[in-house]
Amino acid sequence: MSGRHGSLVLIEDRCTSCMLCVRECPVWCISLSAHPEPDPASPPGGRQRTINVLDSFDIDYGLCMFCGICVDVCPFDALEWRAADDLTAPSRQSAVHDRERLAP
Image (cartoon, rainbow, N blue to C red):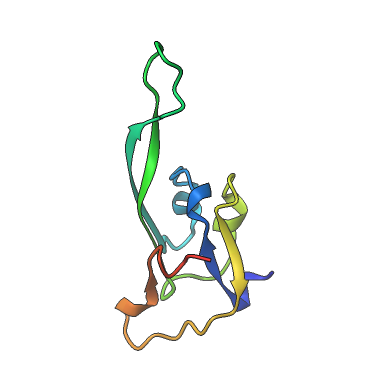
């Protein structure tokens, strides 16, 4: 689906907080924060590995150009387009969608 007439969906269980979407966004409308935690799949007796756990993920639709680069660069398919929502907002602050509003 073309990004021009849709909004984004964040599929949290696929997101590894790799920050590619944030770094590649030409207008920096995505903000993401995460923290490291021990990886439960680390082999016993070896060095403890860590994974990033998503704390927050926000998209500012007041800045977004709907170019779709974030969807294209995500190696884990954690971002997808959905049918057009009404993205009009009564205030600048309400144009920012957090991970709950971006859920499928």
